[in-house]
Image 1: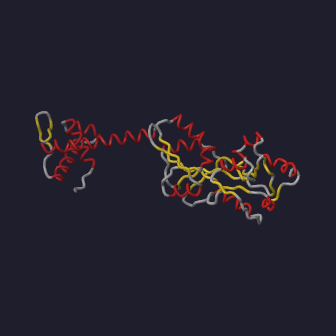
Image 2: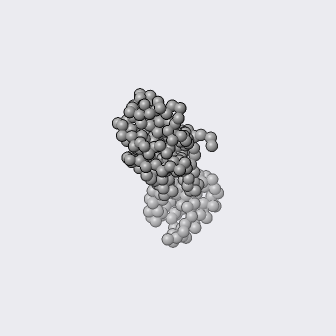
Image 3: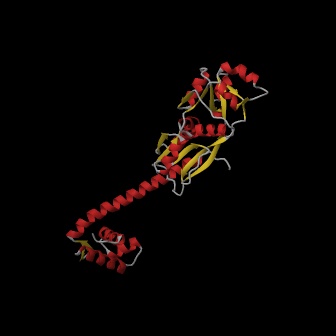
Amino acid sequence: MNEINMEWYRSFYWTARTGSLSRAAEQLHITQPAISHTLKQLEQALGGPLFFRSAKGVSLTSEGEVLLQYVEQAFSLFESGEKRIAEMRNLESGEIKIGAGDTLCKHFLLPYLEQFHHQYPNIRIQVTNQTTPETLHLLREGKMDIGIVNMPAEDRKIDIKRSLPQQDCLVGGKTYTELVQKLQHQPLGLEQLQAYPLIMLEPGGSTRQFLDRYAAAHGVQLQPELELGSLDLLVQFAVSGFGLAFVTRNYVEQELARGELVEIPLAPAIPERYIGIAALRGVPLSSASKRFMALLPLTED
């Protein structure tokens, strides 16, 4: 296949459209001799004449007529592509792929998704529920645009910006109200947890890793009797009296206010951590992803 400069086809296209070398030159903002030279190069590359001179200017040969059909299709596709890009930049079309765990999706992400969808209803939103490590993996693979993760989380290929704070705590059902009263002046020590049935998230997620490291830093190994797959299940089992559960206080405020759960004071206290907004480092975000990121709250480091 001959390597032909795209500008040759532009000259051919506008000469065919206008029937005039001079008008084609005006359209392309170049000189008529430049148009003539370009057409000669194209004809030499294709092996034959594409135009012949007529009283009204220039007309296409039969070969030129055939070529024009394909060139018109190509230019139409170019115009369609340019229009689609403009629509994406104007947020009239496009797609965002977001990764987030069940808890973060329900308690953090959903209100921002609703706001964005209301403002830009033609943007397709795809949400994949994964743990923080799984979300970071999908980002590295280029299968996600944005990840909502639990911090601390680190990956040299991913930029993670700090969003809202969240505080983990230990809770139990109503049956533990008397215990809370006894602990008003002396919080429960981590080493004392072994005396109570403990409910935790399954291993593998960042929250479980964070809590295990917190306990290990104080010489304690947490040994749960029940390991469940979501915060909602932890809350339900704790409310039902199955034991003490580590949960995120931000997400159980209603249960605490209603007295369905009581918070067990712990010593040492669990450190505060943050929600993270993650994206692949060095890869430009689409217009839709940038606009959605702008909705998310960020906290100064």
